[in-house]
Structure formats: structure tokens, C-alpha cells
Length: 240
Ligand SMILES: [Zn+2]
Image (cartoon, rainbow, N blue to C red; front, side):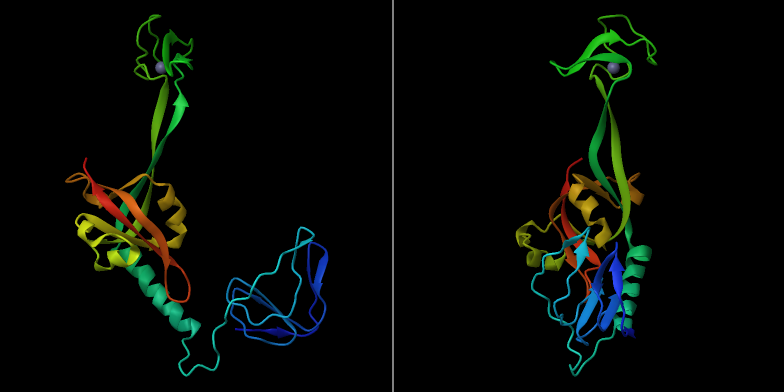
């Protein structure tokens, strides 16, 4: 995993950051070694003071985090973690359900009529060139008098679904409320979308038979072994 390069000089944007015996690790774990170690992407070994420059400024240094114990009686290799991750990935990708995350609709001014900014609706005046001409003073047929057009925005992601999950209480969801509560497990990459979503359609593939719309009540929380690769969130069934 680790490659030791002696007398390595590392320069970023023209700033030499280390000129002595240096280990450089990118996306791999390292343990204490030599004078300095620069680690990007995963756990860092014990660090001597190594200035890191970004755009010419030295980054503030904080407390360093504990590292994996190389002397522990049980060693869980990165290979084993990768096997675990590949199995969970397969569960999500192949057993997961399609979930539509629904966001606030995009609002754009109606191209067919003049907007009344005070009353926040259509003025009832046709804009020449618009797709649906109508007489002055009548309701705009294109936006139905709203003055703007809304476009639904949604994203489809794969999630493992668990209804009324027993571990809901561990995440602060009241046990008495677990009826109609679904736990979604998916990749951490989807967490920003999950946080922005106002509602979601779970079991999207059977939407023709039944519509199961839920709203988020807890999470997303990062989960995973050694690496926070996934996230779980809890959603409550809403009517309609
Ligand atoms: Zn209009």
C-alpha cells in the first residue's frame, strides 16, 4: 500500500512543501513513518509538523485523528472492507428499489402573458409571440392565470427500503410512530439530494398501482464500516 520515496520534494502550485525524507500517500492509509507523512483521502499516521499550502496560504492545523492500530490482535484489511462494500453495493444496486426524490418545482415566468409583480399573478395581457394568443383582460390559457409556469423536478435513486425498521428508535424516531415509517439506505453521495428533497415517491415502479409518497423526518446519517460510504434516512408516509 505504502510506497516510501526518499528525498522526495513535493511542490504544489510552485510552493515547496517538504524537502526532507517524505512519504506521500494518496487515498491510502499510512502509519507513523519517518519525519513527515502527507496523506490525502484516508487516515493519517502521526504527523510531524508539515505545512500544507493552498493558494499560497498555510492551512490551519487541527488535532490529528487516531490511526488504525497496526499491533491489534485482529487486523481487518482494506481488502476485507472492500469486499464488504462490494456486497452492500450489490444489495443496493440489485435489490434496491427506485425512489424518486421530489424537489420544489422550478418556477419560470409565463412566456405568454405579462406578470403582475404586485398581485403576484398574470395581468391578463398577451405577450406578442407567445404560444397561445388571448384577448386582453381574459385569463391567460398558457399559465391559467398564475403568471408563471412550474416544472416538477425529481431525481431517481436506488435505495434499500425497510418499513417500520426496528432500529428507528436508535435514530431518534419515536417507536410509537414507526407505523408507516420507512428507512432508506443508499450511497452517501445521495445525501445532499435527500436533504434538499421535500418528499419522495418510494416503490416508484408500482406507482401505476399505488402511490406511496413519504416525507423525511430524520437523517440522512452516514453509516458504513471504516468508511462512511452509505447513509440512512427515515421517512413517514403521507396521504395522497
Ligand atoms: Zn400566462
